[in-house]
Length: 417
Image (cartoon, rainbow, N blue to C red; front, side):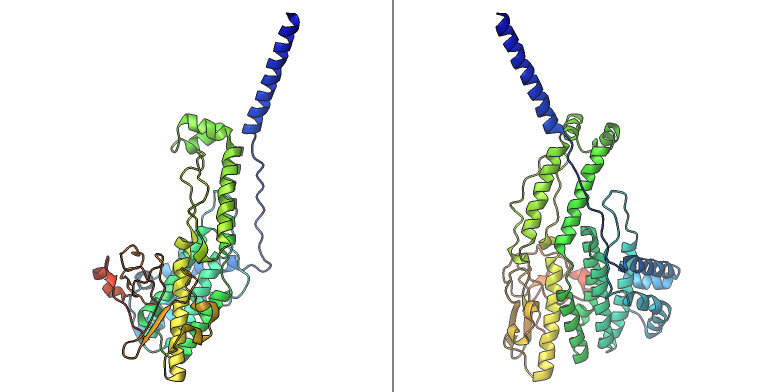
């Protein structure tokens, strides 16, 4: 009897030890290692940031100039000359930084702010105002040079950054594109300048893999913070998003949450290595841990593809017009332009839609997110791509004074000359 009792206690003791080991194994903290930020020698991001912020302060001191830049007013010759005289030093200052190594400066923590973003956008808006004046007055070559600067500025400000950096860069690039898409470029020197600018954009892309890797590191920095902070601080941080039992479970299972999020990022980055038109993010792991619920990364189709399509379309449009200048006729096929990747629609992996009419001119567009040919119809106001039968992307924007009355409507197909 005593022997049986001893064996029972031994079994119970072993089970207790195994339970403790299991609990420890399940609740042990994850080992989180976040590499330090690496910057190239001669990184000019801080110089670019300081230039933009000094420009913003100078602009804010002049109410008239601030209103012109903020609202993109049409300007007179006198105003154009005033803007050039006052702000050209800032344009010259940032221009010399555009071909130098530039990686966004920040750390992987939750205490950062990016006050420079609004300054970068203001600098692009100044260029846009000057560009509109130049396009209205036949100074297309100067406008094309400004476009080139703004596109490079957009890429410089987001290289090596987070998604927010990428989106700010995208906004800057569209600020530069708008005047050219609205007014059009027709002079040979300007057309060649646009083609060269777009080719540089294609040859020097900002790495989306790097952007999303930084997002991954930022996410795990959050787990490192949860792991280090006292329970009271953790509870104060999460109590608006979860109940007390969920908060306790979340804190005890940080490792499980971290590993679940790591698997999500791994699958996301694997999909990201494919060409834009082959990516499919519908089968990413489902996130169920309390700290991960509701987390989802914006996909490249949301973040990048429209921008890539529009920039490339502008380059191809310019190349077609340049071909007509040189040969007296439009090319029969986009392949005749010998532009390589520039003619490829990032939504389909095939050449953009292109057709020529002896009377109307030519059409050029991307099939857009639905990957269906809607005949070149597109939303009057950008961002309303959900309009049925208006999902194509065309290298043209409706003039600003016509957008409000056309909001929510589809624009008919555009024929270019």
